[in-house]
Image (cartoon, rainbow, N blue to C red; front, side, top):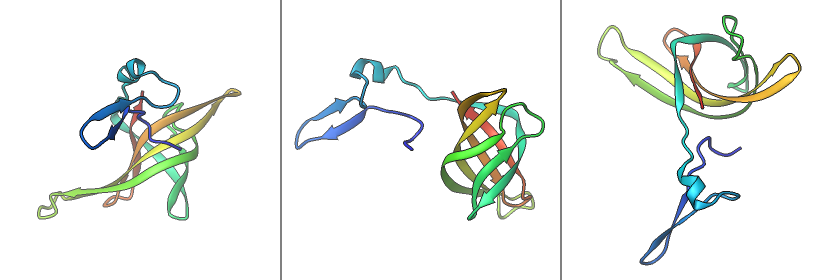
Length: 129
């Protein structure tokens, strides 16, 4: 699966660069594409089923959404900080696509999921619009 954000690609020549729109889009419409993440405050705790060390399914008991099979993922990206302090933090971040089914309807939703490495908890930090 491709990245969440379909940006216009830049083709670099010897002297000039020209903008090339993604397949099926004009250059004009590709400028209007914007991907934004809606941050959940507070983050939504999820339980995660791992397969070969990677998320395969998520379940979010407190929310109607956030339940389903992980059909695509990117990551993990590891971040940490304050390791010299008592309140150090370390986390892995994943971008995931989840196949959600609700009353016979199906949708693919893109999330930013975080694994808190010090506390061992997983949560959804936000969803991509």
